[in-house]
Image (cartoon, rainbow, N blue to C red; front, side):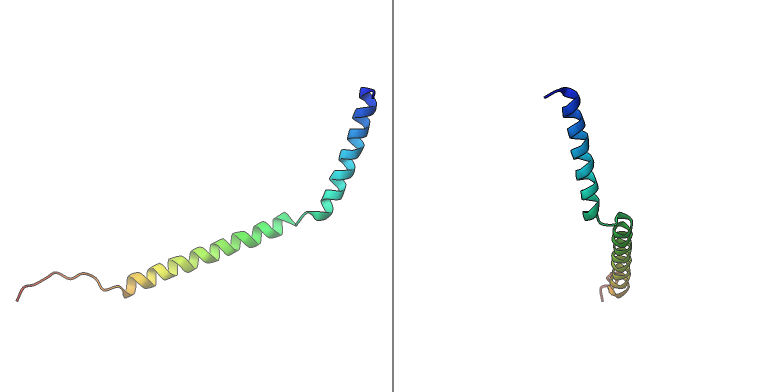
Length: 66
């Protein structure tokens, strides 16, 4: 096969595959935004739990022998 014909067929096939692949793509901005806000929410919950645990944990007091 001549190199020019091979290159032309490859270009056409690649363009066709590229256009068909666009049908299966997820909206990246929407997914990325949802994942980002989910991570923010998880982080806020973890820090809130850390504050509650620190507030309810009894602090060590100095030992005074009787």
